[in-house]
Image (cartoon, rainbow, N blue to C red):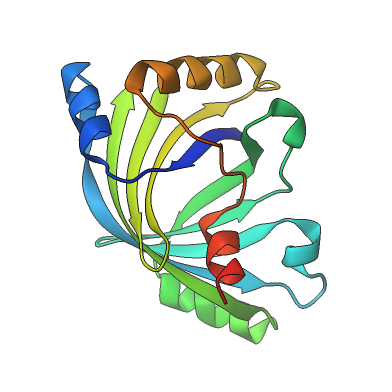
Length: 175
């Protein structure tokens, strides 16, 4: 699957939250996400623009691989593969035994909404601030998804320069 995403830094999430409610977006809940990123022993993910993370939420762990960003779509777009695991801690131990190293940890508190075929995330990221994201998972080249995201952003009052960096990259840039 191809993840097409618009991420924008916002001063406040209140207006967007109200706009989503006014449009009858489906509220999917809120949660704390604790992400632990790893680097491979055989190549540097920072150089190859890939990411491997273990995400912990209240009740489960998900492993995610993110491929190199595809800048030709204008928004942040990349391959994303996810799978739930029974134990994130066991998976982390496996990574450790294989020589993978922890790169960084990201903590965020996220509110999730669904409107049409798009996911909206209202994020408070520790050490970075507040952000709004609109995401569509596409199976094709993503051109239609990009147009839909831009249209929805305008309708919802989301403006500002799109951030193409991941939260991990933003956090590492502050160090």
